[in-house]
Image (cartoon, rainbow, N blue to C red; front, side):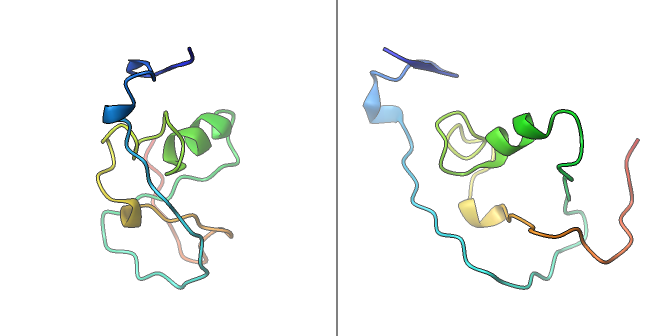
Length: 85
């Protein structure tokens, strides 16, 4: 048996299953949103956490409650962003 962040995945009744599809779109991003760049040392961890259809991601574990609250940005934004130290 493999384990996920909650222990054994044998308890399939509590596993959240989501189906996602990527579609190109322009986003109006509300104030207070976060942009997490992937040109940093722990980028793989960020990808694993934010990928909505992985068993150990934020969506599967209820940290992010809605799949539509996460967007994959394919190019860096062309606006100035505030970097939090």
